[in-house]
Length: 297
Image (cartoon, rainbow, N blue to C red; front, top):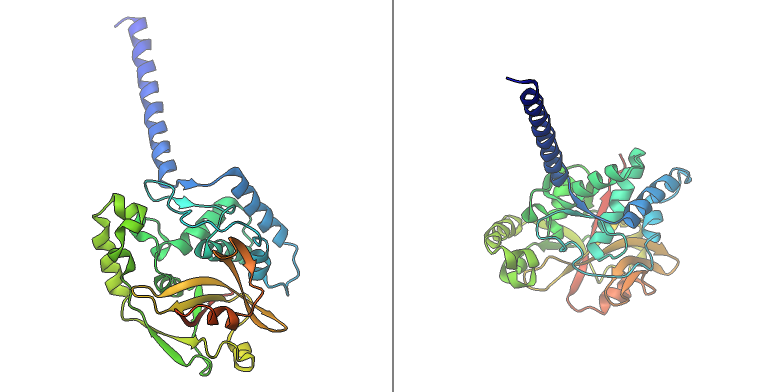
């Protein structure tokens, strides 16, 4: 074998090895893929670094939630990819993504994490069943499922005492997604997923949780002991096939309890000017509130 042929063969071996390594890296990147902009990552890191200098008495959850007041309300921001990827969007929020964004920031701050990668891990732990992203059906689409899963993981605790004000019992009965697949981009494109969603709905239906009926929400005397600033408020509803109508954070003011939320009505993140009791009274299908508290590790 001549010298030239040996060199050619060696070069081919090197190129083959490099190509294999590149493909392996590409697969790893796809496995960890996320959708976000530079503005999203920059904001997250800045907020986390700023939070290191806050007074220890600061309610860190409300501190982060207040940073998003004025951000536009936009629905379906998680449905931008053909395959399920972690979506980080701090520029457009709905009620669920606001709660997840702020909670992920809170979890990072409690651990002293200030990197965007750690934030993405925290958000993944919140958004997906058992904290693992494995396709569209691994995302926790019903908030009752989110509550249960995060409690099992030790991230949050659902508050269901004292009684009063937790005088009502919700029996979850969900079926909306499987009954309206055309309303969901992924289910419309992948009809085979509807059976998986229906199975998840069946497993979730029948669980019970104590909640505060809206008739009790304006009773400040009993409410102050039950609901704390920064608690996640999940508004229960009577709409067929649904469990939770809306989400936000609890904020106590001099006139009572208010809701900090990504509002479809106001088209942005706001601290509702009316009390939560007044807010609930304007929505006939709203039946009350469940309370979820982030565990302070």
